Image (tube, rainbow, N blue to C red):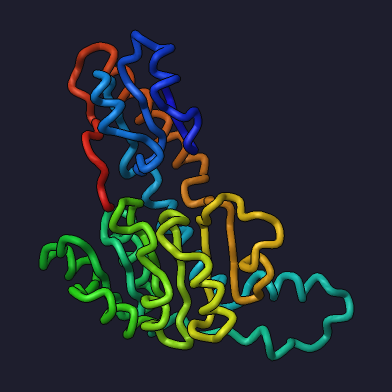
Length: 278
């Protein structure tokens, strides 16, 4: 069985109809939509595709950061107005080059974001469950922050790149947003549930932070009329992180290889036995 974007729902009612099922081959690294202990308890393997979209997801993180900083969406709309002769002051953006970037979650995607950020001469901080090696930090140009509060306090841009797990659900809420700089921007490319949307709306409306750029929301898409959709300081894309031809091809190929290995009793390259943070 191949799954993508949480479809189909793999639950007891579905598994009861598939007594010969050997594997659930998931597209993407995240398996938060799957009850892995239950599925594997039925003798069915679960696989994922780590790394298939990490590069393209890191690209989107930088895309959102830059677009938000320089108000690209608003600028494009202004350029389309025939009578727009003077550049409005509200389109004045903030500098990315030389700013401080805080990355929450230094897995493969987070590390690739750090590598890309070096080109903008950014000071790069990161917070992660496990500290990277000294050599990895040197190559990535990143400095470890043991305290999340310290990272939030020091960063001009905060990018979230963690997986969804019990300890990351609601990771960014009122308290964490209040620790950020008034001119800071929050970028989320992980899962919508990692950020408390009500807290984010309040922080943006009150000026606690400057802006937010989101490739993920919960629910997805947001209901029409949701406060986040009406804020000029918010940029939202419909989870395009892995949506390139090359990334989808890599993902599909890995899904197929995982499935073939499982049904032919070969070692499964990307078997998932528990949920992971990043």
